[in-house]
Amino acid sequence: MSYKLSILIITYNHEKYIQKAIESVRMQKFFYDYEIIVADDCSNDNTINIVSQYKAIFGDKLKIFSNPQNLGITKNYESAFSKCSGDFIAVLEGDDYWNSDMKLKLQMDFLINHPECSMVFNKIIAVFPDNSNTAIQQFPDNVAYLLFNTSDLVKNNFIQNFSGCMYRASAIRNIDSSLYNMLVYDWMINIVVSQYGLIGYLPQPMSVHPVLVSGTWSGRSELEQLAIVLNCLDKYNSFLNYRYNSEFMENKDTIYRRINEIKKITG
Image 1 (cartoon, rainbow, N blue to C red):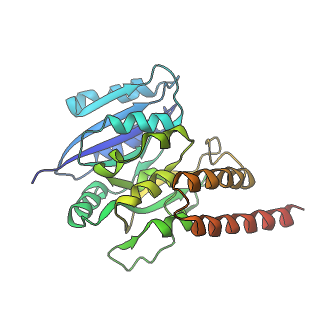
Image 2 (tube, rainbow, N blue to C red):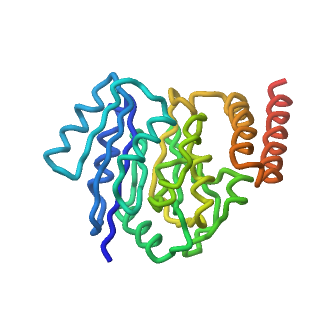
Image 3 (cartoon, helix red, strand yellow):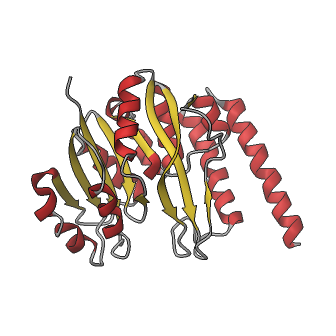
């Protein structure tokens, strides 16, 4: 049976980073059929011009879509997912990159061999402005893979980044369109996708997320980030009809404890 992968690159004003992102796609040792979907959310810099230069390399496999007006991250993902025609979807945000040429092959092989999984993610490395780095996922390295379920992810958002993820496209297409009427990040989309199968984890560090001082998320203080998550928790809980209420409440308690710790430190 033949399979097709959609490589979805999400961009918005990523002219400083997009070349590295696309080069990390170009280096992949990958033998399945694929397409590259670039979904640009009305960038006002040179992002699209840089991406367009790769038409000469990828030809018709590269499809570029630029929104005539800014949709925002949630609606841009909704639009972008709808343009993917593959059996699987790998996401790469335009300011991230993959640091292993086996990333796509290992993930796609895993999903083909594990039909019980709706998605898979790999260890993601966060790189800070001082060039220090840390693994986002603190799981054992001496395993072939790990499996998680929705309850695990609701209690703790251990993925935290789209660029380490590959999805079974059928799960993405099953997402209720009303989800995109909320402000949703990777966490909630991953929670919903996990309704259709287990979450696989590969311990290889194959994705890099530069933590940008000017980032829409990383540019906020920890208190601001926690406040946003708290606001999302109740909305997500309601969207899921409170099926995971105890897990959401456990997560909320953890956040309140962390907020109190910060306030004690800062006085």
